[in-house]
Amino acid sequence: MKLAFDLAALIARVTIGVIFVAHGWQKWQNGLGPTSEMFTRSGVWQPELAAGFTTVAELVGGSFLIIGLLTRLAALALLCVSLGAIIFVHGKNGIFVTNMGWELVGALGAACLLLLAAGAGRISADGIIRTVLRRRAADQTLPESTGSGTTTTMPTNVRTVRETPHTEPPQNGIHPAQNGAPTQNGTPPTPAGTEPRADVPRQSTPPPAPPTSPPAPPATGTTPRATGTTPPATGSGANLSDDDMKALDALMSDDQPRRKPPE
Image (cartoon, rainbow, N blue to C red):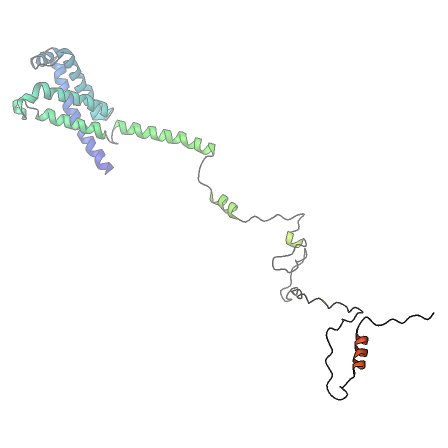
């Protein structure tokens, strides 16, 4: 689509520019006097100034449209010339050119309006200058962004280093696992300078035995005092007298009668 627009803009610019240059060259050959007299009869304000502006705009502006230099500025000047011609000269004569109507002037003004809005395209002097300026700006900004170090992207090797888990460096050439520190599974570490044998399985330390119940406290020398009455014994010889029961109670109690020492 861009290439099609560039080609269409090129054809339109060259065609319109040639028409304006031809009309301007005709006015220049006839002189500004007849042109200003025609503008005076048509009721144009300041006919001498208007005649000079129209001649220069058609010659210079038409040439700029052909090469595509300052296209919008040239199209604006020629649009003003076309509107003035429609208002003061051709608008009252109708549409057709045979009756000095505004047919040709209106088409030229509409084309100038289109170039004023869309530009000249890339196949023009404006397009070439714009491309060169963009390349120079890109070449100037690239070293600045490289030297400042403010780029937001991070290299892949830096991401890999940052995402790698941190491991402590060996101290005095000995890895922490070889310096007597226990491993995660509880097995003793391999001494430095030796390699574990694959045919001999490692013996894991047995788990500690569960704590046993505390031993019973040693018996004291006192016998607990019996409370209540002793149940009578059953079987043969179970019939005891009251004196025997008192003697048994006296033996089992702690308050035994003390014997007085001999005087």
